[in-house]
Length: 110
Image (cartoon, rainbow, N blue to C red; front, top):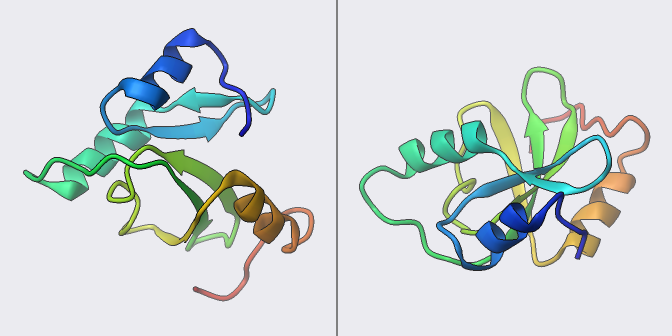
């Protein structure tokens, strides 16, 4: 698994409320409060289940694909602006993204 940018992010991922993590410019996982709040609002009144899930998220406007880690499979299951695919681990998600080339663009919707 990739490393986290700091102890807060690592602790939140291992024992905190379900959250969304993105890679920062140094390649480290960082808690993203905006993505997390947006995801919780889409889930609604239900409490998201715990469980780390790796996602490829394709921006519908540009086709650009990024890797996202969420500590709940419910947080990114549906998104109004992204096509998403779940992966069991980081290595699988990274391999699928690398197969798209550089930059990682998926021109067709998923």
